[in-house]
Image (cartoon, rainbow, N blue to C red; front, side, top):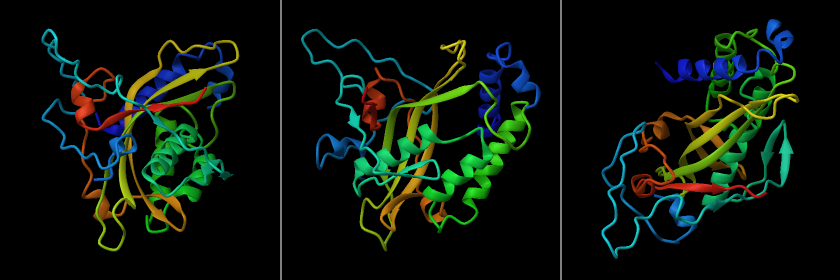
Length: 260
């Protein structure tokens, strides 16, 4: 099953779990993350499980120090945006933490079931060098809506609120001979997603531990999403994120701190 089909199926499950409550609406429708904690610290990922697997850690010998895991490590605190435009947060600093903050805010705010709002957001945060990227993403939103049993174009079904929460990030610097090191980064996110209604504040079938990745570069005073081929060719794939996995820590997964 490809990535689109998997997400369409999960979106359909989220909606189906609330059908009884909203039946009317449905009828119409390099620089690494660890550097934020310890400057100058670079790590080579140790051999471990591939994405989708979590290898259990062996018990620590008596008297030894427990293995470091994302849960035990210091979390990344997000920078607050200084602006808002087209439904997207803006104004993140030119730093590793700023890149992470820009991507996390974008994904948590992204109108992934509303093609018009999604286009407004993407127009703000996408690099002009990413030719056709916005149109391709809107096509994916519409395919996902269709796969979830909704009209191809439109907003989120009335009465349903989706909440996306990023749990952890993994960041690597990409190379560009014309840009300083750290100005192009590849960021993976591990996230949960919940669907609720005014009458039902909990989701019995949330999306848990899903992943998505973005490439962003510093351009015109902001972090902007891009899919330029030279950068896409440098993408790497992480081991599965697990808060208690030393393999996830060695692969540079780090938890995100959300302020209360």
